[in-house]
Amino acid sequence: MALRVGRLNDTSTLHPDTMSLTFTRVPDSRRYTLCPRGSAPLHVRRGAPDGRALPEGYKPRFVVADDAAGASPLAVVVRKGDRCLAVLSPDHEPLAELRLPPRKKRWRPVYEIHLPDGTVLHGRKGTVPSLLLCLVLLPLVLVYLVVMALSDTPPDSLDAPLRTAWKRPGAFFGRAAMTESVRGRFRVREGGLDHRVAYAQAVAKYWKV
Image (cartoon, rainbow, N blue to C red; front, side, top):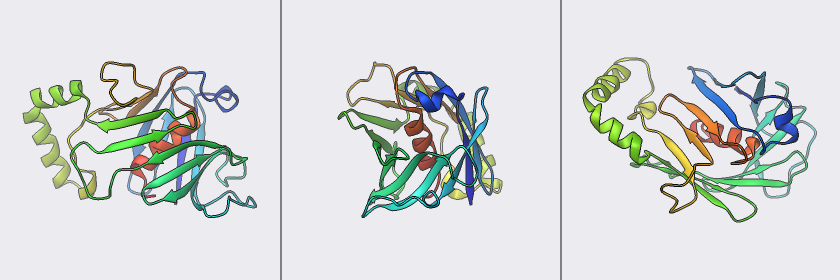
């Protein structure tokens, strides 16, 4: 099964961490698309790029590439350990390490991004503003959950609509490197995060990896 994701424009590949980026997740029953503002899509496929060996001990998970076949990869994501993924460049340069929350569903799960320079970003689902808004709109949220439960939506996807923000631990009032709105729109501020890492995190957060 393939996933399609997109980039802001061609220069984001050459300078992936110097431009702002906005893209939206659009799921359906078979695959989902990440639609960047004003750009052609990238493609995500399971496994490793064809004809490219991976570092010893790594298990391939998915590839972000310019083409559907994965022949021109931008980032390669491999399993490094239990609930731990490494994001590599096509030349296997480490770009980030993604640590996913336990499979058992928890209140406000945390998605961690560990960067090579030692920076750690915590993406905790449910920022203070989104929690307050959810509380104010609680009756509508309950109606939303009931409607979703009566539809064909898988049970795992039923959840209160809450915003996620990736920040340094303890930086409650600091600027987020990346955010996901309650409507599934990801925003990466200029200089906040390598776009290849942002794409990988958006895929890993929802795709069964």
